[in-house]
Image (cartoon, rainbow, N blue to C red; front, side, top):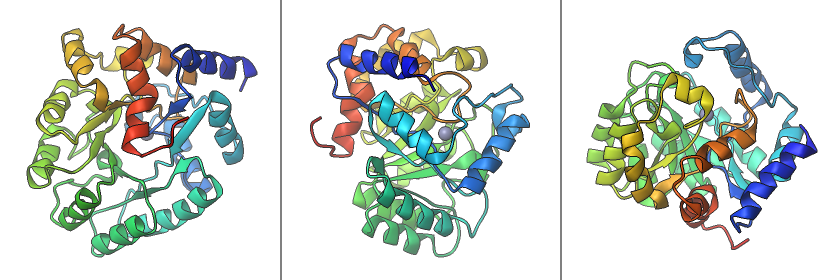
Length: 296
Ligand SMILES: [Zn+2]
């Protein structure tokens, strides 16, 4: 990293009069799992949609956390997710420990449709999990699977947000897209889903769901960047809807697994031209309110 980039990121939020950034979509996971994810991106696996994906921040864990702090990210997450049954509880155990040694990380948990999921989700909530991550594409499960139903109920009742990768970008999965999520929300209308990547590429369908359900939010992860605009451009006609939903759009970056510098995500938001008030909400205030962060 360069001090130069950190300075540029800080000037971005200082210029908006913010106390820093809140990034709801950053990846921290056990080292050997992260190594596999990186190998996957290097190998142009299906998740990359076949595109070159050079990881910009391939550093040791403590260095990555230090970099987020240098950027002025006041709070971030540890997005981790299982690709098969029997793995979520182990990941959640790691995440408890990570949150303990990383006070600026919002304690993150995950889940999978499997027997016992309601029990371990409830236990995670009771042990202080602030946010969950679900990855419909990697997990290759139907989010409306009845095994998950009681777990969604626990999370809806507790008001714990779930960042969910459910759009069909950069590559579709068997159960990606808005339809399965619509079924989940029909059963759990107060579930606080945060649709990752703004639902890319089904942006407008997921905006529909956010307009229909007041607890649905969207994260900006990779959206509007040069990289994603080539792959799945955000439709200009939907910009007014993005403005109207300004209090439910949250900054996400996918740090460290991004093929461009962190600053680029911020500038990609700025160039939408939705104004400083919108940027303040998206880059800090909306998530600070959602997670009850103290004033900076
Ligand atoms: Zn991600």
